[in-house]
Length: 195
Image 1 (cartoon, one colour):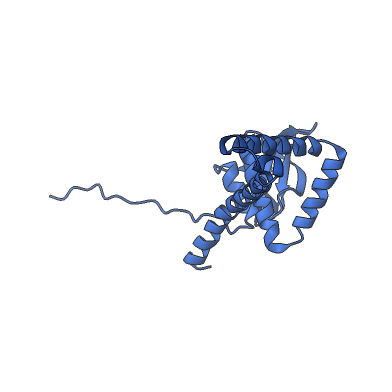
Image 2 (tube, helix red, strand yellow):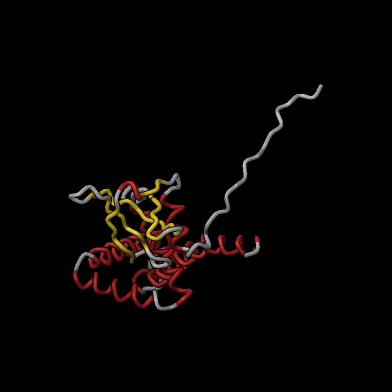
């Protein structure tokens, strides 16, 4: 892939989820502001009431997601979104961005590499759990839908530690490899003084 296409794809991977989140927030806010009760209020009060209604809506949906009905709805929504090629990437990237922004990455464990077959390495994440016989429990997400994957029990000697961050590994998996950054070659500085 040429350099400009790689740069365009990398920029799209970063910007598209942010734009989707902003468009959804803008749409929800404009729908709330257009409610007859809020539209009739004076400007400073209308804004604060709209924000309060929006926060209450988010809390209500969040509470609903803890119930069985909410989990079923989320499962069907994920399945529907993951059937459409471009929407699938945007939806998963937006969902990951919001989850990371809200909960942070402290719950996610260190990314590692495993070699399930000779010559092929795959990205997985430590779960912090071990089996009774001392194997590490890893989660290997699928690309680009990182909400599914494989749970593996791997001998610690078969795990290759990496120095990459959780965000770098998730970006690579989520973008199906297109978000991979090219390694930067070190800059050589000539320290010899000329006489």
